[in-house]
Length: 299
Image (cartoon, rainbow, N blue to C red):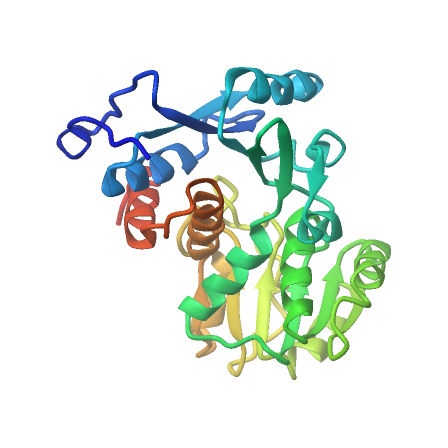
């Protein structure tokens, strides 16, 4: 694998005809912290690679995938709203991507594009980093959108007992049914995200995961947790939101004596999974985390 000349002496990659290109497609894409995260990792390891953000409107995703092949890119990430579109455009899907119903990472193998989903494994790695073992746990997942699919699938693969609550109950029930057979010891149920059901299901939960966007910047005053429902002190909260680093829901949990973790770890670890798929090299997770924190305004 080629080394970048003076890679350790410049913040900007020195590109050449040997530079390996990866990137991310999304619409919009300006907010993504993936470019600084991955480019910091490449610099730290002295790899002659570069990660580029590509703004791609939804109707041009097929052309973008053709461009990945034609330009010789090593792979791409996909973010909102393109993760589902990739399913029908790649040549092959991993079991995780097929089950979750979304691909957030593509690797190029010869002329073939292989669609992966690194979100579920990234989530489980982030839980482990936070000191929580999800195997067989009782988990409560708030929301039933795309992020919830990755979270529920990940928890199901380790035999967790998962309850999905969503404002539209039918979506929660459909998601529970979709992952019913993932693991023989897992149980997955769904219900409405309303105060009475939430209070009842929260009582025995060991892990509560917020997959909704409620509380994300700029609407930081929002929360999926109703004011009249007490947060259980015996559960750990994992909030997938990472901007802001402390949401209103996280403050509620900590005030109740419960540990609360933001979504930066999942962001970093899903990126680390993609990095390793592309390069075959262990990702420098601490470097990637520091780059994300800096890109988000630091602390």
